[in-house]
Amino acid sequence: MNANIDLTVKDIAKIVGGDLIGNKDIIVKKISRIENCMANDLTFVFKNEYIKYIDSCKASCILIPEGFLQVHNLNSKKAFIICKNVQLALLTLLSFVVESKNKGIKKIIHKTAIIDD
Image (cartoon, rainbow, N blue to C red):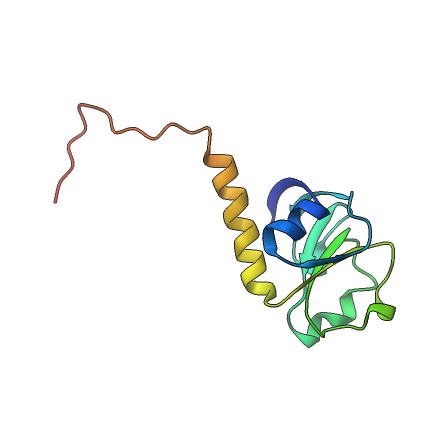
């Protein structure tokens, strides 16, 4: 999954209703899986099996669930958004991005279109 976005970590935390730890001004360019993320990516962790990737991943921001990690274990070079439900937060963010991109698209049905039952 790679979804292109262009938001600050602060904006993302507000959209998903999460608590931000770290640099609020980081610009996130896309959402990626934790195994292959890059700088300026946002990634997510909601299963214990992915904890091992947190220190080595290159993402600038990681969505993590409440109680998943203690604050003193978090790498200060990354921003973390602590969420009650990471999957719901990710869905909320993706919905926001899609709606934002579709705002300028005019939805019309051509007058010659035939709609069948």
